[in-house]
Length: 393
Image (cartoon, rainbow, N blue to C red):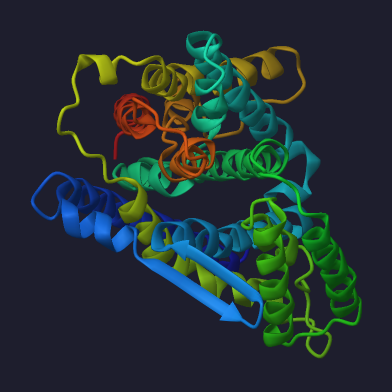
């Protein structure tokens, strides 16, 4: 690895860690707004109607859904760019580096979902949230790792980031398959027409960002009207951004867009999403709400399910000689990293909004309680285990 690659990776991890801290601050502000006299202004802001109309075509949603459907599409676009880069020339380009985080991600999604289902199997309404504890928030997890400073080996950061990428792939598939409304085939036809156009741009190595963004915007609007969640348009668009420049092979349009978006996503989009979605009103919340099967299933899925799923599946794969424990990672540090995977804040909130808040179901619980409790417990557990297991500074 040369100096430029090393500095890029170092800068990337620093940015993600700082973004995790900003996320925490945004979530705290949301809780303050939701539980003080400012609550009325907080609700008024999120319920503000925002409408775009062009002739007979219109998109009319409250501000909260513009954040969840619009800004988060940019976040998923960045996820798609990172995924494509990793598969082409990153850590995931070497198949030997895929097995361990891939197996860990499968366990980290399956076991938490099973724990949630154990508590909520008899409630068909609550079962809509089965995927909430299956998510991992890489920004928060790297933010916790940053607290341990230089003691954290690069191998742990690479493993955690690679696992989060597989986790994001799983989340994308789950959203596409399970969280769709009534399908509008006429809107999907527009999406289908956009894809060959993007493929043509890619094959001819068109580097105009505005052209890609224009087609991506049309595809996003059509996806929004189709019933398939609009954020998936960001992932599809990312797959067609050229990896290398036609005029200068040393330049990469994909890497340039990824670099430009990191700051926007880490310091603006994700904190705005956290502020809009983490505001839980605790007035009147008692043991009945706290011990409801949904928040209990989410909290235990994140805290216990992630540890058992990630560590257990990795242990089994290593014992079956399917892969090996990376250099610089001990069994105890692997367990601490598995605990950090239980921080599901951003993606869990997002899937929770798809499962419950956008379905017009009047629920007597708040799934965000389970997300916050499970994520906080997982972060604390992971930090304490890693602090004890990593070499002293």
